[in-house]
Image (cartoon, rainbow, N blue to C red; front, top):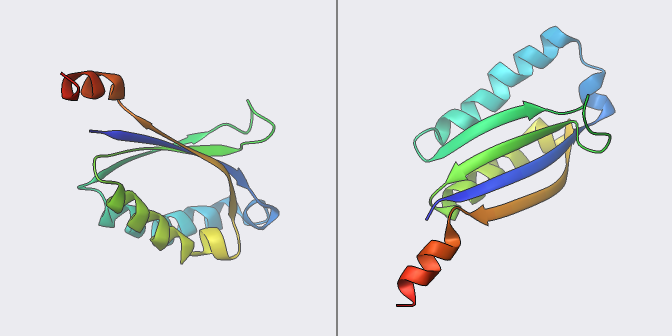
Length: 109
């Protein structure tokens, strides 16, 4: 089954203090290589929401079939400046199963 994971983030002052050029460099040099390691197993989409929500400045929407891949992705992020400076704080993580009820009903027949 496909898992959809919503990660609600808030940019910290450490991120906002960086110039836009430095943010772009960080993204290209630090985040993209981590995401690339999982490009075959995790669909990663990124969204800005700071203009629309007071608590969450950004969010990630991930789609993955094996939660082990998701877990390893998060471990890589934890070892990066995203967590260690931190540039972002995780406000919440929501995990859902796409059409989970259908799989349940099928398996319970």
